[in-house]
Length: 140
Image 1 (cartoon, rainbow, N blue to C red):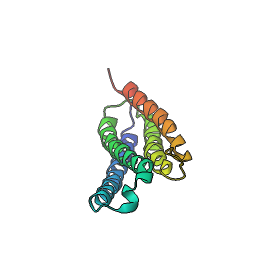
Image 2 (image 1 turned 60 degrees about the horizontal axis):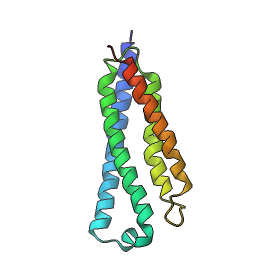
Image 3 (image 1 turned 90 degrees about the horizontal axis):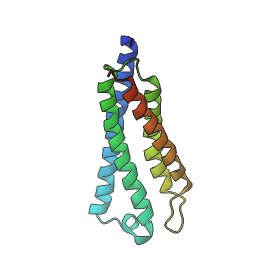
Image 4 (image 1 turned 120 degrees about the vertical axis):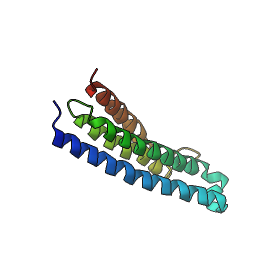
């Protein structure tokens, strides 16, 4: 059986993290659009194509994962037992996936992303574990 206090704590944590990270990644998206709209030379330069791609991927994945946190918070009440491992993995994935893309934008050469891109597969594994654990904790 799920502890109501634990479920409430997880729900609150993921709602706050979800809405907070949604704010961050929507602002990032707005900044990227503004740089594109105002034709900022260093942003649109052909040599910065990989960097632009990494920033767009960070924005898209961060926004998506923020919404997943809100959905997770809505799901916690139905889960039994509370998906604590899923919670931790989802938080880790929400840092590693967009963070890997953001860090991959720096230090790359010849069209390849920087070493920070190595966080992306780690984030993917954490996300898969979070989803599987959440699915498993739902009643049949």
